[in-house]
Image (cartoon, rainbow, N blue to C red; front, side):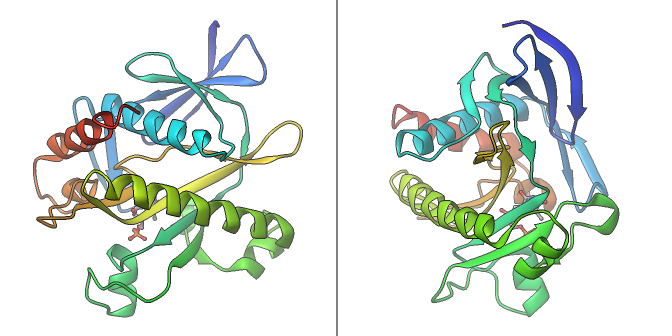
Length: 238
Ligand code: TMP
C-alpha cells in the first residue's frame, strides 16, 4: 500500500490517498481544538492514543456486525480505511445530559434522562455546526428519510455496544458523536473516529472525566486520561 497525496487536513487528522482508489490512510495528529477552533493546543501523543482507541472500538463494532470504514491500524498514527464520502451531519448520542445540552436547556450536568437523546448537527464551521432536525437534513439534500432511519438504527446499536464495552472496564459512556459516509457503491457505513475526542467518558467509581473535556475545561492531565482509556480497553484484548 503506497501513500500518495494529502487529500484533506482537518483539525485532528490528515487524510491521504493511496494507490488503491477505494482506500485512504488516516493520520491522527496531536492537535486539539475546542469551541469551533477558538481554543487550540498540541497535546503530545494524543494522536497515538486516539488512533489506538478508535482502532479498538471500530474493531469491536465490526466484530458485532456494524459495517465501518476501518480496515486496519498501520502504525502508531495511521489507519488504513475505506474511502467514503462523508455525510456532513454529526450524530450525537446522549445517555447522560452534559456539555452543550446541559447548558442550552438548563439541566444539571450528570442528569440521566429516561430516554436516550439523539441530536443532529450540520457540519459547517462557518455556521458554527448548528443543530438541525430530520426535516432540515432532508431539505438540505444531505440524506433521505430512509437513510436517516438506517443511520438512527445503526447508531442505537453502536450506543448499546459501546455502552456495555465501556461499562465492562468501569467507564460510563455519557455521550458521543459519530459520522457516516457513503461508499462508491452507495452504502452508508460508519466512518471518522470514536475516541476521547468524540466521547464523554466518566470513571464509574469516581466520576472523573477521562476525555477531551479535560482540555476544553482546563482540568489538566489530558494525555493521562487518554492513556487510561487506552489501558482499560487494551486489558480486554481488543
Ligand atoms: P456537546 O456537549 O458539545 O454537544 O458534545 C456532545 C458529544 O459529542 C461530546 O462527547 C463531544 C462530541 N462532539 C464531537 O465529537 N464533535 C463536535 O463537533 C461536537 C459538537 C460534539
